[in-house]
Length: 151
Image 1 (cartoon, rainbow, N blue to C red):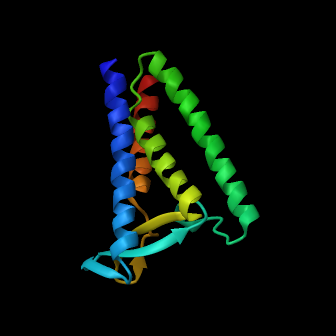
Image 2: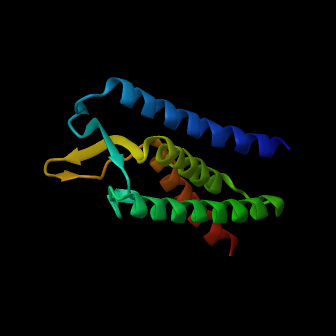
């Protein structure tokens, strides 16, 4: 039961931190703010998926992408529950699910995911992202490590 509570605390903490940082950006960041030469903050709404793929202002395409994301999240939740029942580590899955759920909240409340972190160097820049995205990426790497180790 303690492990369950730890996973639940991790899940809800990530959502809370992500949503809080997004609220801060919505409230206080009106223009691009340069923190360091390679780190800036600027509010953007992503209506697609990672890196702005499938971005569209059309409601139909946004709805289809959101439906696909919900399906993937539900499948991962099912896999995660089964792994937990088997006594397997679900740290990575918890990170991915928390990030995905937090970004889904944005899709429902803001009709797009709030991204605001920009890493850049000279003429190169990484696509805008947020705390939930970082949680998803870290979670996927952990899952890949654990799944390859389990085989």
